[in-house]
Length: 323
Image (cartoon, rainbow, N blue to C red; front, side, top):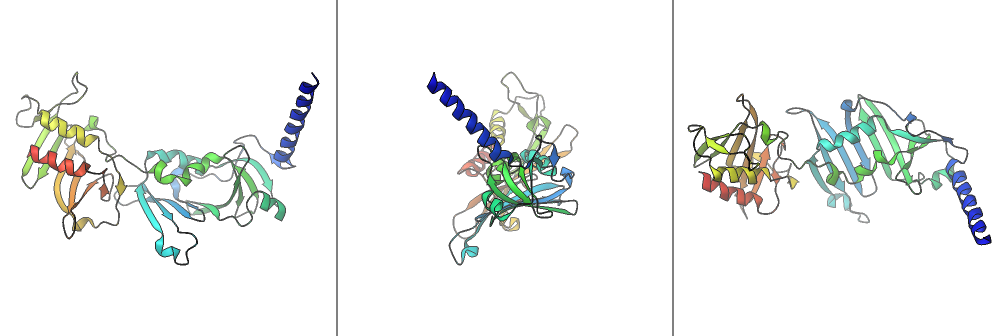
């Protein structure tokens, strides 16, 4: 019984110490009761996260319609010529980033720490920190210096560059930025779905075929018939080709590849029931010096992309059976 009482006293003391460490005279706020700033998420023009060995940028672009473009630059530390060895990966940002934009349009504060002395700056990891977050929106620039995480949570100590005040920021607004390339890179070839497609035209140097898509049957897959024989027998070879095409996804974006230097092997165009263009897929080939390399480009990817190993080659082989 005495041992139980002793453990109870120790538990109460530990909780009291933890509470003192948490509050320490700071202003404790209800979750979500304060935002550092509030902007329209659609007006956010760029988000930049920087650390000692990494820079993540997401920026809004407007060419051929608005979209978000991301880049991750990794640095080589401890090398006097590290800048020359930096590697940058670029990617189209997918719909999953909407949640990030919403969080950074109105970042939530859990605690207002006020102005910190040197001891507290060091304790919270803000003294000499190499991590920062900059959000630009509607001609406004908001910058945060990032400290350590709060013990037992994903929340971060931060200092606002404009006011100099420190806060505890909800971790959800920052965690995914560190892994932005994996979390936000768009893997779809198109923004539309096959349900919206009524007809497809495939063109190669050998000729072209236009096929109508019928309603999905009992098998769960659509059937395809020639436009000049809409009530004819469905073409299973074409159906297999479209199924495999629909299973492809982006492996890597290649913005440095000159689209004009690539040879178009095939072009696949999609239209809806009203005959309006939905988009296209281009199979491209670099067949100059060295080993031939295949790429794909669509209206959605905007730049050449690579697929998983061998997928583009198999697509070219399938095209040979269609035309």
